Image (tube, rainbow, N blue to C red; front, side, top):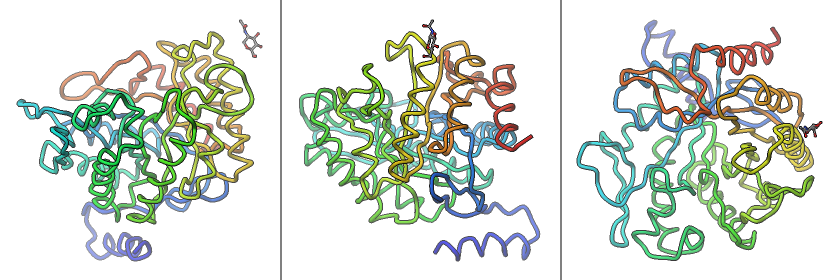
Length: 369
Ligand SMILES: *[C@@H]1O[C@H](CO)[C@@H](O)[C@H](O)[C@H]1NC(C)=O
């Protein structure tokens, strides 16, 4: 399947000699501690634009994707979930409705067809996507949207409840099988920042083991990661190093169907006052990744309002660490048909001075300029 696709992508443009939309390249893979993207093994820069599949204007998707591709960003993380409990009456995009103990997937034009467009735009742009399949947080529904429909105490019951896990797997199967043949998928992620506060680490470990095996049974050709923040590891005593949130970084990275580790970094949100702390955080994860022989992805990081000092230092630390394969700053911003995209003060807008330091200079450094 894989070679048939790449053969087609080589032959089709020659035979047709036109700008027919086509898939570029091959499925991303792993080579030691690096990602391989379209045959190139090395370090890659990327970003997050969680909102891209929720846009209803194709031209906006093309514009944002075009700006990323032109800048040399190779990896893009977008939300592959959008759960709710009541259907919006204004055509707002959503992917799954949970109501009265049942779940219904929205495959229509204000549903997964929007994600279809993002995937096809990424294929054309040569950008590789990372797609998490549920949110721990309540934004865009999250685990609590399931809990509201199925019952349960809070998010922690979600990981072990048979009915909610069945609905989650049905959703995974629908999304993953939809893009199983796309070379624009870098990885599926079990969720965005899955935590199980005050839980034994066995809960997330067992859920991640079962779910990653389930995804590989549907789609053995794409990579799988957890999408967690990387909490729970040796090297420090501050809160993020503890297993308070129910995650053990090394234990979970050792799961056979988990292909790479993920780490996020938000000092202020974690009550860490010295941003230099972040450099050690990156290096401590890189060391675990090296010891387990799987790459680390520095997949979210940001500092509010100030992007060209300590945030750059974190980026440099990641680039210099053997165990880190790529970094994705949080988050991409642009000016689209409806105005500026979401600005959470972490946003770095295309074309600004901050963009120059965090994206243009970084990509040039990676490319050895
Ligand atoms: C922040 O941490 C770094 C590295 O540990 C240290 O060199 C620096 O002195 C610290 N800064 C402050 C203001 O504590």
